[in-house]
Image (cartoon, rainbow, N blue to C red; front, side):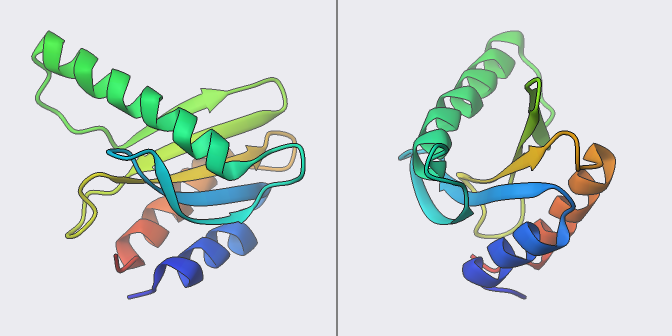
Length: 124
């Protein structure tokens, strides 16, 4: 099991094209940890904004009567991928990993696979 800082560092260094990663509490909108980002891309602001995305999708699923669980949500921009992975393991309720990828340098399928592994090893 890895702690938050170790897991975030692993995501940033091992996932090709990763430019930022955060562990976020979607009930409060607060980032519990961030790594990467830039002066022009504030991960804490992005993480807080993405809590609205998660909440909206959960409400929509409830209204539709869908019983499945969200694994991840992908937002693709012209030059970036934003991957939101809801934590499902023990202690992960209400949390998600938020990963920002450079679209030109990343392999989305591999990033999803690696983020899932990091989630499984994360101790919250």
